[in-house]
Length: 119
Image (cartoon, rainbow, N blue to C red; front, side):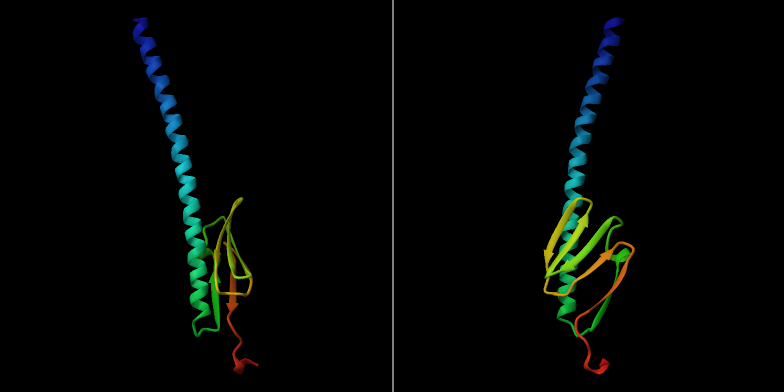
């Protein structure tokens, strides 16, 4: 009877060790996937600004709650798009040369040029 109990304890111990190792690997995969999605988001925002820069529109309103995940912050300056995610920074290049900052709960209006009729 004691051998049966000891074998079950050994099996449970091995199961716990196996679960702990799988959890660590899955956590690393999740962090890597999240970082990759933030890189893609920075690239998509840079592309959106490039399209805006080559369009005929004079202004564009950006709503952070519709563009950014909840804990992210966006800073555009010197032809760079920087997406801040905690301690990580994801960078992409753009043709948009002006600067602005956008948080998750913020709204910003950016302009490409000033219309001659508005002056």
